[in-house]
Image (cartoon, rainbow, N blue to C red):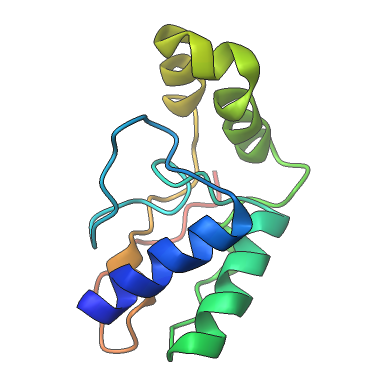
Length: 120
């Protein structure tokens, strides 16, 4: 598990991504979309690079917003200049993400921590 965290931090650094909330420490309970801001192509690149380094479980597509979804828009707005400058703007957009909250632990092959898929 410690390997997963090290690899995740390395991949995020290579991609130039930081957690959405300043000071958030990456852990097994970090949510992929809500905390790390992985949505659309960013998640695809993240998963591809992480799977080169260690075995990881593929998640159902319903857990990861597509590039043109409202959830990806919310992540983009949280990363925007206004979102970075004003915590209220960032938290407003993050609170409106509707996809199921998959955690880093759910990427482990032996994990039972897979949230149910939400079609709504």
